Amino acid sequence: MDFLHFNVARCDLCGQCIHNCPFQALRMEEKGIAVSEACRMCGVCVRCCPQKAISFEQKAGTVDKKAWKDFLIYVEQELGDIHPVAC
Image (cartoon, rainbow, N blue to C red; front, top):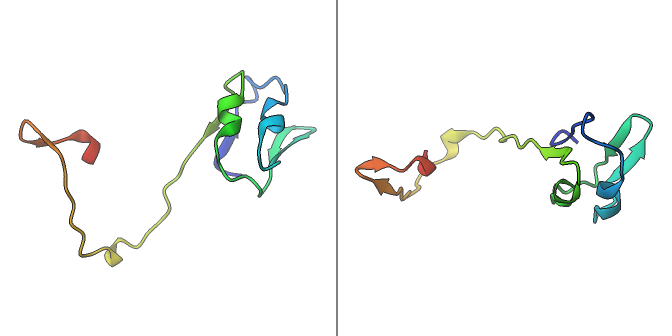
């Protein structure tokens, strides 16, 4: 799975992520922990890792923005400028 990353320097192969995965998407292999197609990116493994060795890398998908039209967008202002959270 491209979105989950394991820091091999931090991971001590304790197996907590495997044990806590509700989808049985993780398994121990010779080279370390592998993620299968069953992963639903629920984040349980990230939260339960005692070594903080697992992280997500979320990538935005490509979308044809030319198809986007007829949207009304409200943006918060602060002292006359658009608030940074809206950018």
